[in-house]
Amino acid sequence: EVQLVQSGAEMKKPGESLKISCKASGYDFKSYWIGWVRQMPGKGLEWMGSFYPGDSDARYSPSLQGPVTMSADKSFNAAYLQWSSLRSTDTGVYYCARRSRDGHAYDFWGQGTRVIVSS
Amino acid sequence: EIVLTQSPATLSLSPGERATLSCRASQSVGSLIAWYQQRPGQAPRLLISDASNRATGIPARFSGSGSGTDFTLTISSLEPEDFAVYYCQHRTTWPPTWTFGQGTKVEIK
Image (tube, rainbow over all chains, first blue to last red; front, side, top):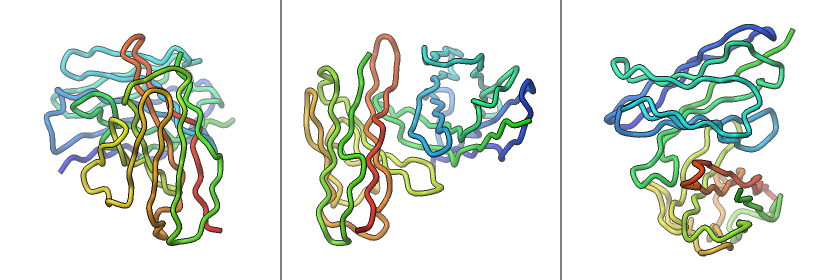
């Protein structure tokens, strides 16, 4: 059974760093793209980027306003999303999702990680 | 940049009724549209890929149609668990971009 399990909720202050995780199981982790999708409070879904664990290829959305880094640890079957300096506008729920084999949809999703950035 | 426009923003229906949701692309996307359901407090769930292919485990009351710029998600007879927000989505090969529509909320009338 394919599963993506994300790390727990975080409360941070502006300027702090953060790394959230997405632990995959039930499939060949290194052979599927992982996408990250943001949902700000009360809003819709927004694609942030995609990462291929097999060769560490990363594609970022051109609309990202702040520095964020995607990465993965193949030995641990985990993908990560990292901020070096959080802003209040980073508040939201972050989902990881597996890109389908045909490449045009996200077929499995993590449960989401809620991030609150407030002073 | 492809823009996906969903309509209506909100659909008020009763259980057992038929729901018809629309997604319009700003330029032709072939059949490369997916649909997701998001219940309150939950992660999105893939319903339909490639405009009309139901994902594994999705009930037959959900169907997708369309090609080019106009797409439709139909729920033939609403069950209580179907009241949720629905998003359409397209992936552009180059530049590699994933776009979501703004969502349609199906609420109980």
